[in-house]
Length: 605
Ligand code: GCB
Image (cartoon, rainbow, N blue to C red):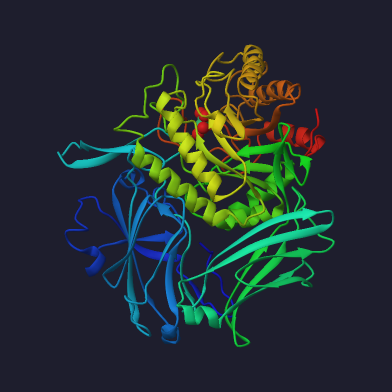
């Protein structure tokens, strides 16, 4: 799905701003047809933003159920001849859009965009009534999985609660921008670009998909492609719906040294441009060879973080200021990569990664496929069962993987797809599940695949690693086990990594390791939760990684402190950030800056 764009053939109106809002505490919205009749006695709510921390109200912060957003908008008369679309960047987790009372779209998934044509429902040149209903419940057939249930409050009123296994707050609402945009009646629905190079010649293969025009209009149009360099010089051209072109003296997109070409696609009829769309593309190649992860033929060592889309007040709402701050910090600390733990991030974030030269591992929201909430300790209950993670869940998993890949395939920064974080992969039934999932993903795109395991999956016990290219390990020895004993944790870590590599013979990425650290808490000698402990823990882990050539990268958990559900082990959220939630450095940030500044992207050991 192409991101909305203002071009010579397309219009764009942002509906970000303040909407009317109402949480449906009494479950009366559907009965009273709020989608048709509108909201009475509403609050004001910004879009995009999570609603949870906006109000000063515990009931809204923890609300589980339907909320309603409403806004009126005049649609220009001049748009009458066009195809008019409404598009929501993401809303968590199940949404419906009504325009003038007509249901135009229903969508499940909290972290990917959805859109619909609305021509049949709108009045041109007049005010139109838009209502978006968002429900934040989860089931065993959604990603992430969860379970909503009812409790009674002191007055005997029923209210819903949510049981979840994943370790981040269930921020809810419309999290990414809402747009109205137009395309011509015959337009480009999708563009796929793949890149390669030989010597100093870049190779771009592309495919343009038009909306289903009839034979006649299809024959009447030609696709024309032009590629421009960063100086805006035309460096390549091609024609046809599918093809390839060469770029002489190519400048590659390199980690921490981005170079972007502009790929312009046009639908032309009798010398007249019907539709136009452009993409920023980077020319680069990703391979796995001899146990190494290669970007442009060079072994790449991942230095960076697992992150979250999370901030004060706005929760998971897109915020350009915070995002640019994050990329500035990534650059400052000499990180070269991050994983979009544990869901696909906003397209706007991937655009920044392309521009800053930060490598991205893109993750589907398959988190918490476990019989226990994080931190999981001891025996895990089985979840790959008929009632819990079943064929329906697999269908959703494949659908969301397809949609993520369709959305993000053209980003040069994205080098690998992560298909799950900490699933219960030692269960026999997980094997067939992940086999089918990985096979489906390989048909969609040729980037390598990652599966991420938790530390309860002992070396050799994972039933699914064989279907993946890279093994991600989330290890917390010296924290969740060997608590406070970094030396013991370090010994266990080394043994674990060696055994795991022996069993799987695949490159290993340390996709998570870290400790909760209260900013400003200093202890000498170091004890758990102090800034000194975080530094010593990371140093000990790095000493091990530096001895093991099959470790292809280190992603500290987490970039910044983030909000979680309330729990004994979560003091105002998860405090494993190297930066605070307000994006200021803890001591560990200075240590990492020194380490990552001194090892290259290749880090040959
Ligand atoms: C994990 C999870 C992550 C948690 C983290 C922790 O293994 O993947 O979502 O936040 O551990 O801090 O316990």
